Length: 104
Image (tube, rainbow, N blue to C red; front, side):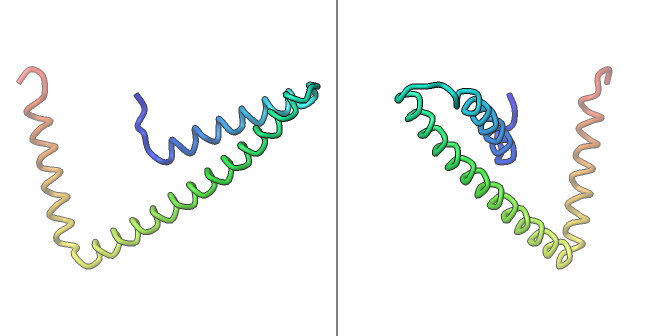
């Protein structure tokens, strides 16, 4: 199963929008009042979805910038804490790698 995260969701929504757009273009010449109304509703829904996806992309980018700024600020204010944490994680990963290695 794929990780569910905002970037994957936005990418998948873009694919759905593109597929729906192609379907609408392919059926644009079909006659009939019901088909024309359904086509118009689908066009409106597609436009709304495009706007929501664009808004989500902007929101994701804004949040990412905030996280990067906050992390950068923390690292510059507390460099030794970050070094100690990185060393601890490296030690733990090394220890687990050796312990879980087959044949030991």
